[in-house]
Length: 93
Image 1: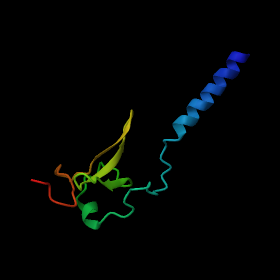
Image 2: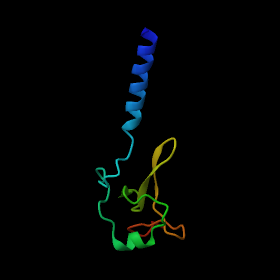
Image 3: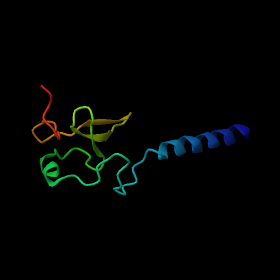
């Protein structure tokens, strides 16, 4: 009996920890993310990228978007349909 209660409690804790990373779809940006992208960025960005969580990388001035993969969540460069990064300034020579 104690074993089944322990397993049930462990399952509840496991499910609760997974639920914290679920996107609720409300469209609200996390702190540091851009809430309204320019029309230009929206028109040149490739369609497979998540534009609800975009920020500018301070090291190079390029846009990055949050990619939620099966194992981890990371930020990837926001790219055009041609594969070029979308940046706010020219790259340093």
